[in-house]
Amino acid sequence: MKPADLRGVAHADLDTVESVGSARKSRLFGRNDGVQDEQRVATHRILPLWMLSAAGLLTFFGIWWLAAAASVVPAAFLPTPFAVAQRFGELLMHPFVGYTLQVHLWSSLQRYLMGFLLAVAVGVPLGLMMGWFRWLDYCVTPLFEAVRFIAPIAWVPFAALWFGTGIGGPVLIIFAGAFPPCVVNAYRGAMQVDERLLEAARMLGMSSRMVVCEVLLPGALPSVIAGVRVAAGLGWMSLVGAELIVASSGIGYMMVKGQAAIDTATVMSAMIAIGAVGAAIDVLLARIEAFAMRHRRTPRR
Figure 1 (tube, one colour):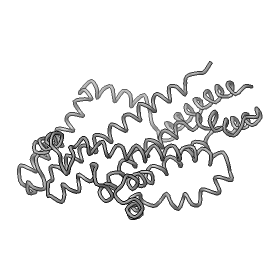
Figure 2 (tube, rainbow, N blue to C red):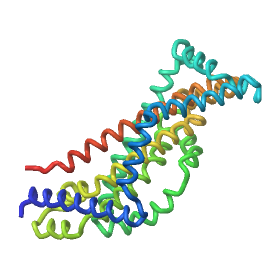
Figure 3 (cartoon, helix red, strand yellow):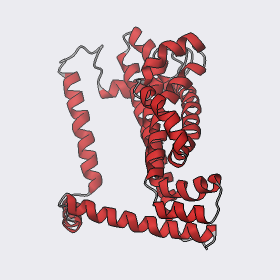
Figure 4 (cartoon, helix red, strand yellow):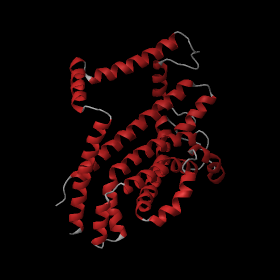
């Protein structure tokens, strides 16, 4: 059997495992997918799904507006949605603490991409190799298990001491938040690869590098991508926390200055920008995941 044939067997076998796993989950939790589909169709006939989403948003903004209009909280601390939207537009046109909103956001994205991509580039290969080399697993696991439970924000004092307000501090904190999910999910995915495929790879005389790239990575791909998505969210949240303390620009720094000036509309505008960018990152990764899974399921000739 050639390596190319082995890859074809791996794809077919993994698809079978996923199908069986889905069926077992349905039986385990007593779930009837047919009934759920019928319920979704019935709901869709009664009311379009986009209208349900719109109703949820309108309810949220309605409660917000009523609370602000009734002066439940002073206007300085709870502005109306219109005031926040107006301030958001002003921040796009006029600088706040030296830069406009989009410049602050771009500064944050640069730091985020550096820390996140570094975490993926180091964490995923490390996790896969830990799943293949037993000696590496035993060497790394004790230290990794101790370090991964340290909250990313706990690295802020070290980041401030080592890097000051430069770009290195936020990158370190983002890396600390995004690195553990990449390692854990890649490792678990590698451990779940069918042992028969690994035995076949050994019999064919494949090198360790080929086994990791041609067998472990395709087999662990769903788990790896899930870990990357989790890491993306944790990295983005870690960035905002880092910029609250060790940055002189960025969306988190903008929030700190807005809070100091008791400018709640500015703080809420920054929060909206953070949420929107975070959602966009997750949607992008979901598209990449769907593309990767389609490519993984496509038979190679």
